[in-house]
Image 1 (cartoon, rainbow, N blue to C red):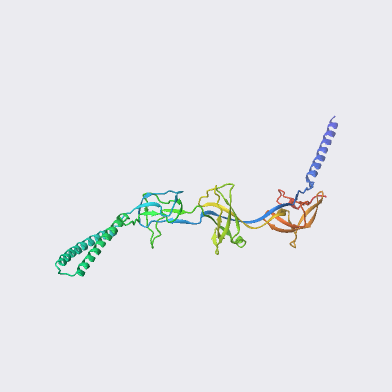
Image 2: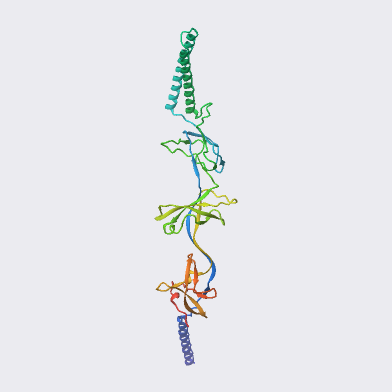
Length: 374
């Protein structure tokens, strides 16, 4: 009995060993590779370059005050439409002590001169009535009196301007800031109670508001130096705005900067393009946008994926065409325009041909070198 058990155990071990060898052999045996195929198709090939930038008004004006002081009243807010001459803000003038003192002194001096001229005129009139002075002397005194009277009015108006920014009865108002153009208020960077500085030859002044024509927008962006030589003024653009989904706007390239700028370590050239707005869509200033500039295009041409192309050492381009089940032959092709994904085929194959797709295994290209077992 023990002998039978030993024989059975030996046969079991032998069978297990044989099965292990067969398993390892089958595992090490390379499986045949089955190549996928793809046919050429008719498509539109469009070569583009992308410029990043923003949508901005073509005309944007900063409104600045002509006098310094404190914002007493704001008449507008962002988003409001204004016409040229509409009031934007009223400024409460804080007069300069020195200027105010000088103006008051000038008014006092003018009044004193007026009183003296009045006395001289009255004396000349009395003498003239007694025929003691000539008419020309009387006229000279009258003119002098009128001039002194005018000096008083001018000094009074000057004092009023320094105190409040407006001259009574003269129509001159310097403390009311008005719009210089028609448009929309897109930003009011000041608030009531804030101090503002006047604009003059030595000071840019405080900006009270930004006014822009929102009906005339342009795209401002930058193009890399490797692409700027391929574009020219007048080219069509397709503009997409990040904040407005599923909306595309057409544009026309108007300007390419003659000098590049270093931006994040790369040379970029500024471009500007007119944007064709849509009545149903309101575009806000400084929306970020991308512009696709069409460099070249081919409509309705035979094309294939660029990944199907192979290259010989001499620079010739070819594809592998299936002649029978998983049997391929090399065939030279003439290529045309490429958009980076698909390439135009000018000759060598037809739509009926099936082309071998390259293998893309997980072994980092190892499968790509493996040949189909025949």
